[in-house]
Image 1 (cartoon, rainbow, N blue to C red):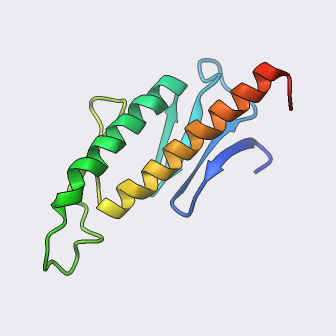
Image 2: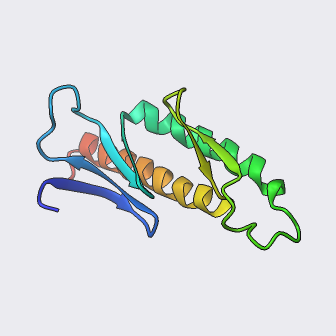
Length: 120
């Protein structure tokens, strides 16, 4: 944990920035959940947040009534900022990823706001 600046985490994943960014990775956020790692810019995080919101909204009615695996079934497709990559997630995983990404964006925006005020 000495090599990273944690931004936000929940029980599902973590978002952080590397202390020693490699060239081309400056101002990118590493997001890790399940066994997936994404290195995203701020605008990619915003885009991903919109993709997640769409998945959550469209997935509300997608839960099958009598299905015994409806909470864990990975029947929803979650688009990412990389057009070629889509994740299969359960509705609960979509909720957890939404919290992770939106919490990360909130913290980044809060830090930016306080930085502009010269606080912190």
